[in-house]
Image 1 (cartoon, one colour):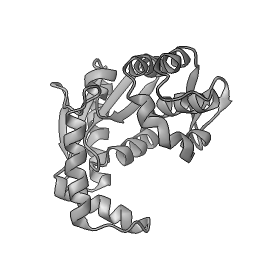
Image 2 (cartoon, rainbow, N blue to C red):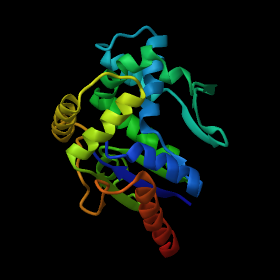
Image 3 (tube, helix red, strand yellow):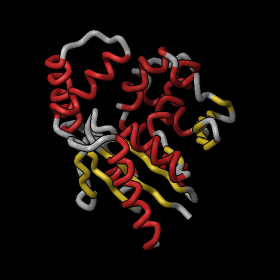
Length: 224
């Protein structure tokens, strides 16, 4: 039986960290929709296609097989039967993945692939348009938000941990610009689904947010 939890929210709200923790705690698959686009980007590179070749890239998308398997070591990504879990994270793929994902016919194909990946499984998925576009019939929809100033502080701490030089003011400006861009995208815009439950993480720790959402999931599972 399929059970889908959709988690949407702005950058820095903690949705990536929280979904990974919940997947581990509850035995769900953390369905990484970005991994599907990265698989296609890898195929684009392997076929020496240019980003301008939208028709060829779309044809490529129509003919690839993507599988995500959950293991004790984490989720493994397979492209046409090959384990590409590490390869899709390499720099050359990262450089073009946003351009590949911006091709509208490609997004439509990827959404269908993502839905097929969830069939018969318990999955938790995070993004911008998961509850509105990718899984509009998700069993549970969460919109994880936080004050921009709080999100900027979190991102600044991450930068310091990773030895990335930045000021809080710079990070806050980037967060606000990113919010504006995400909310106004022509395709896949950031939006709270009408039936999504708002969880504000501004004054909550990652552990508290995780427990809160896990509680909502367990309630839904009991109902089913």
